[in-house]
Length: 164
Image (cartoon, rainbow, N blue to C red; front, side, top):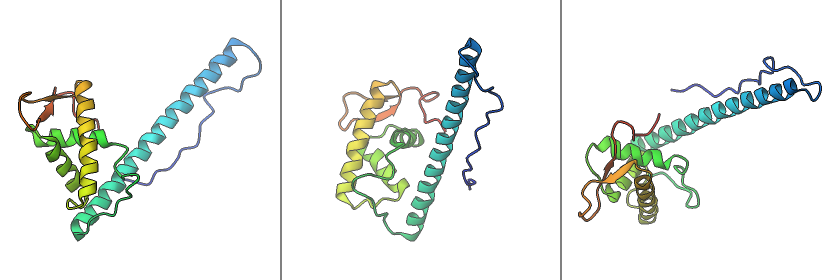
C-alpha cells in the first residue's frame, strides 16, 4: 500500500535572493526555476501514482464484490494513462492480440461491466486509436499484416513496454 502524498515545502536555501541586474542574479533565478520545475515534476509523478493506486483498489473492490463500476460517461476514470493500459495488456499477453481482446482485458482489469455495450464500444474505439498511434511511434507492430482482424504485438519487447 502506498503512503499518503505529502507536499514538501519549497527549499529556497540553495538559491540566494537577487539584488540587482547582475548576471549572478539571473543565474540564481534560473537555478530557482529549475529547482521549482523539478519539484513540480516530482509532485505530478506522486499524484499520478496515487491516482493509479486509487483506481486499482477501486477496480479490486468491484471485482471482488461482483458489482460493475458506475462510470461517468463524459470522462472515463482511466483517461490519463490509457496508453500504459494498452501497452501493458499487449505485453502481458505475450502473444499477438486484436483490438477486441485488448479492450476486453482492459475492461476486466479495471472492473468495468463487460455487458455495457456503449462502454465497450467507447473503450474499443480508444484502443483502436491508441494501437494505431503507438504503431506510428514504433512501439507496436502488426504481427501478420494480412490477417483479419489485425493482431498487434510489441515492436521491441525489450524497450517498448510501459515504464513504471
